Image (cartoon, rainbow, N blue to C red; front, side, top):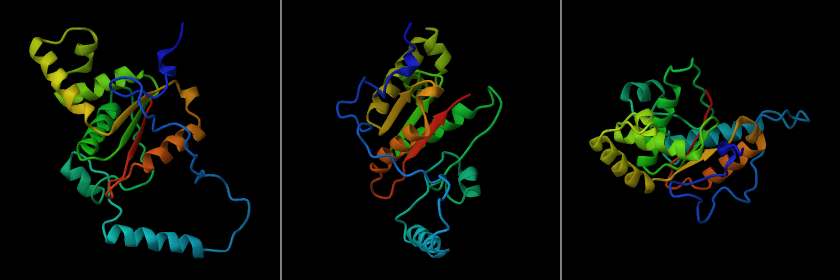
Length: 203
C-alpha cells in the first residue's frame, strides 16, 4: 500500500499549479565542515556587520509569534536562524508550531510546514482547525458539531489566501539537501522584509 506521507508538496486545493518547490538550486550547507582555514575572521565580521545593519534599518526582521511576552523574551520574535523546540509527546510542540505558522502567514510571511508523520491534508486540517478553534481530532473523526463544521469551512477559505504550503513525507524522504532546497525556494518568497518560516514537525 502506498504511504500517503510520501506525496509531493501539496497546497490546500491539491498540487500547486506552479510548484515553487521545483527545480531550485540547493543552498550551500552552512554546517558543512570547512576544508581550509580560509582568510581569517574578516569575512565573518563582514557578515556580522551586514546583519547588524539590516536589523537596525529594518530590512531584516523577526518572524512574528502570537504571544507578546514570548516575543519580548526573544527580542521581537523568531530571528533568522535555527530554532528547536523539544518536548515529550503531547506537550504542545505541534500546537506551538501551528500557531506560529498561522501568525506569520496572516501577516504575509511565507510558511512551509513539513509534517513528517502527517500527510499534506492532515497538516491542512490541523492548520484550519487551529484557525477555527476546533479540535482537529473531532474533525478527523467526524464528531464536530454543525457550528464547528461551519467555522472550519470559513477558516479553510481564509487559509486558502495565505502564503502557506503544507508538505509531507516520511523522515527518510527529507534529507539535508531536500530541506536546503525548500529553504532556498522559501527565501526567494521573502518580500518586503518579511522572513519566511520553515517548520519541520516530527514527534
